[in-house]
Length: 172
Image (tube, rainbow, N blue to C red):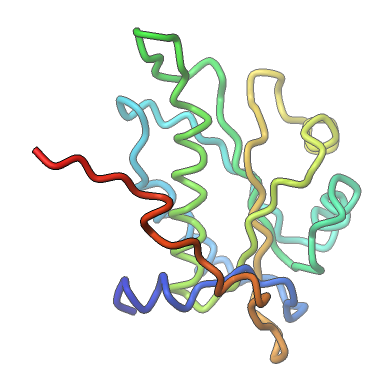
């Protein structure tokens, strides 16, 4: 799929068919995330793939926003493996994890897999439920699967602010 079509057709899927994703599709999606850029190539992302009835049942105890998805990827970052901006101490790892999440989401769309980016989850519950070390911070959750026949974007998906409100161009 060409990039323009990919980004135009992608939407947050909230209604999925029940079957788990096949391993080969998961691997293609993960390979895309593995290619995402990170600050100084530190690659602080840590991805937990949840693709069984048991792991999805555990996930549902950590968020109400699972939308019945049969598969999920919890994208985390290792707080000890972050490039640090010298001017103000800002860490790149949280941003790196978000970039990886975006690559995963777009790769999923390219494979015909719907996804929804979820931030409404309890990080402490995720950490406890999935034995995530304290140095690893849950950052974003992608619930995913094949969209159901009646899946459709929310009306809000088609509403964009005028680009002039979000972009400032300096002319040199």
